Figure (cartoon, rainbow, N blue to C red):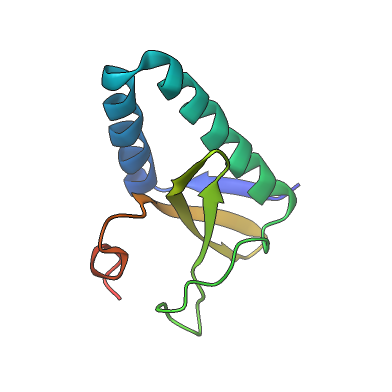
Length: 102
């Protein structure tokens, strides 16, 4: 199983979205947290499963994965050095190219 590291920015993005959902519907927020943890588990098992983000740096490809059951949310990550490094956790309605600086 591949080691997964979460950046501070990923943690902040995730916390913001989980709190937002928790205020609207606590039961949905719990399912959301479980779905994100399941997605992270999938990456630990198959780190190359996410498609390459086409606007990123070709020499250091950024990949992304949709959260199962919450397909508007994307985990952006790098797989390098035998580790998965989670960089951002974003909602698909955002201007992703702008947010990611690409």
